[in-house]
Image 1: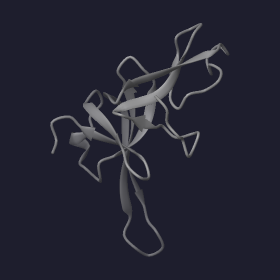
Image 2 (image 1 turned 90 degrees about the vertical axis):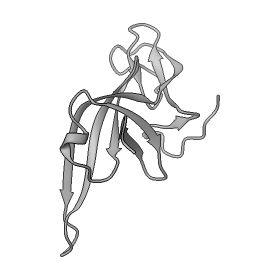
Image 3 (image 1 turned 90 degrees about the horizontal axis):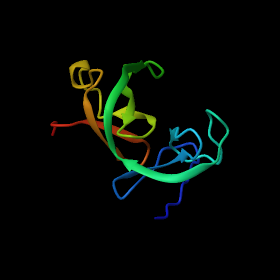
Length: 122
């Protein structure tokens, strides 16, 4: 598996898998991959994770730009199944009820971000 990462600080999805690494000493998982574990300093082994998980936290952000109405964007931290916690944008300004804590989501990569889409939503 190979992937070119344009931004080393951005989560990347390749063939439906989140690219990351796991510490060979303490098993802490991260995405994007790092050379050393942020928890214990141990060496990291390349690993990929399923692009699905559960909402850990979520917020709807309102950002007014100049004199226009506030743009609304949802951001969620997602606990990847057996993997790291990653930050993802929501699928548009959906209502809070679509992104409750513990809700199952799948992650997909867009041109500008990783997007969390609630499972069972069209």
